Amino acid sequence: MTGLLEGKVAIVTGGTSGIGLATVERFVAEGAKVAIADIQDDLGASIVDRFGESATYFHTDVTDEAAIEALVAATVERFGKLDVMYNNAGAQGDPSPILELGAAGFDKTVALVARSVLLGHKYAARQFQAQGTGGSIISTASAAGMQGGWAAAGYTISKHAVIGIVRQAVAELAPLGIRSNAIAPGIIMTPIMARSFGVPLEEAVPFAGFLADRLGATQPIGRVGTADDIAKVATFLASDLAGYVTGVTIPVDGGATAITQGTFATEVVLAANEYNQR
Image 1 (cartoon, rainbow, N blue to C red):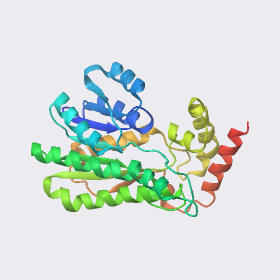
Image 2: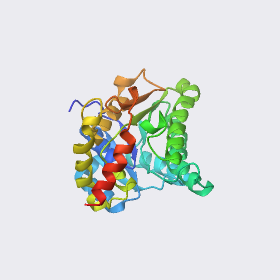
Image 3: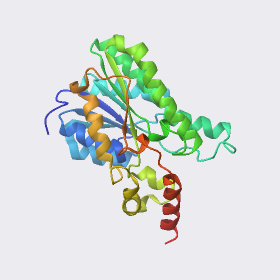
């Protein structure tokens, strides 16, 4: 590693698995101190055991505003400051199509996927302003935030909102030296992918391998993505190398959103059904 984040303090929400865990691993390897925020306490404790003084864990429900405020305060109390806020926590939410999506399901999805990102901006930016240091805010968007048809309605709409938050943050926060950027993953093999197709969590790893083998050739770059593909870009955005980068959404999708994907969405569903029927 190159020490890109040496001396920095970061928060990673949803940091106990998938993209979040891969990012924690990268951030620590690059010299950062990391506060992991999640609701999977056993996993959080085991990760802290791995990294010792370089990491801490806080049980955090990102749909609860007070919990996000407390997360920032606890991180500063533990490590003395905050430099990077990575709003990564999320899930598919209500899978209903528009014709069936109810207000309660939609609101719950928006609260987890989009409102949490807004609140992460709010409390991280307040801390950056109090420090007088500026800082970097990173948010996980999605290919579903750039095009329709990648996911269910509530998730798609919420991820579009994440990109809107990032753009508004430039208008309000850039004058304070605060950068805000998003990463838009394409097909990334994580536990969320398994859960979204009804595959039990204990089957997530073999399911991910099955999909990678089945669908890799459908992607422009010839493979599906990994959590570490996202973590590498997050590390860049967190670092001083990205000091003049703000307001952008970077697709990390092997080129998928640059072209028309044709029948890919249908092929994913067919592949998942085939796996579940084995």
